[in-house]
Each structure stands twice: as structure tokens, then as C-alpha cells.
Image (tube, rainbow over all chains, first blue to last red; front, side, top):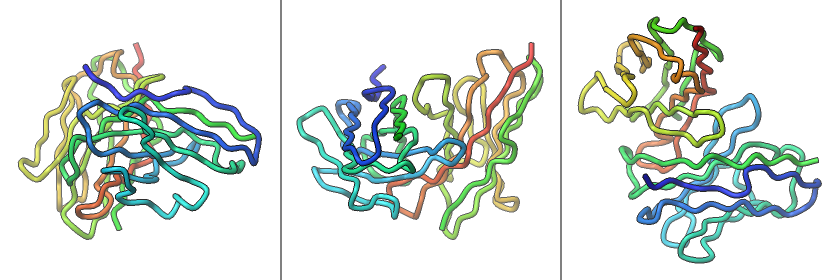
Length: 115
Length: 114
């Protein structure tokens, strides 16, 4: 069964460094998402992406964050200058279409630790 | 704005016993509700979803959930717990009517006692 994959599974970085989290969505899906979960807190929506542009973003997704689909398979989340509070599990998801009923398929997550 | 509350960060049941995981929602528009499960070191997997077609929704692995508008609830149940059900369970609601992002609860860790 097709699944969303994410790399790396764990990343440790120094505060102020740039990190890129990578995701490979399911091949026939058109919509892509990033979520994060700070330890002990809720899974939070960051951004959605369609047709090579941001469809929607939350208030968390500030200028430090960017997303890109650099080729036909990868979908990346870049954090330009990491802060301690960026430490979290980051989930990528994809869906065939957009809509209230659409199922979003999630990857296993990347655990980011900022020191 | 939509939100969900999951009562109980940890729930422990004996193998073979009834599983009940609680989720209450708050929504200014008719909600679409989802239950996801996360097994260790895996992604979030959809268990079931409510999309207004039927109030009792059956999902995978023997789970079901009932949408009760009067109680603003969407509790997840399974008649008989199995050891393989041990996982983290998340309730989610569509973030805004027609928008993309899901709003999740904090999750409930289900522990199965042998």
C-alpha cells in the first residue's frame, strides 16, 4: 500500500541553523501538508500546498518557514533559523484532493531537536 | 473556530474489555470528524471519519464511533480490546469549513493490560 515517507526520522541541530525536512507524498496525491507536534501538546496544522503554491497557512507558519516541491516527488519544509521552541515532531501528509471529507495520509514524522 | 477535546491522556483496559476513548468537539459549522491512530514509530493512520452520511461510523480494526450532536461528542469504541490496539489515538475536526488543515486533540494513549 502506498505511504508517505519522511526523512530524516530524527534531526538534531543548533539554534540558529537552517534545517530542511523532507517528505515524499503518495504519488497520485495533489495536496500536501505539514503539521507539527510539540512534546505533550496537540498536533498543529502548519501549511497546505497545491499546484506549487501555498494553499493555506496557520499563524504558526511565519517567515522562518518555507515549503517547496523541488521536483516531482519531494516536498520539503525549511526552517531558516531554528529556535529552541521549534523542537517538535513534524508530520507530512498528502491527500488526493481538497475538501471536508478528504482523507489526509500521514508520514511517520521527523523528530527535530534544537539545542 | 473548531476545536476538539480528548478526555484522558492515558486509558488502560484489560484485553477483551470494552475500549472507550472520548472526544468532544466545538464547532461553529457542521463538523467533519476523524479518528487517527499512531502505532510506535509510524505515521498517523485514519481509523474512521464522520461526514454526515450516518451518525454511527464503522472503521478499521473493529473500531466505531457515534456522532452525537446534542452532546457534541464523537467517542471511539471497540467491544473487545486486543493487545495490538495499544497505540496513540487522535481525534480531529476539519479546521474551518472548507479549509485544509485539521485541528487535532492532544491524543489518548491506549494501554492494554494482559
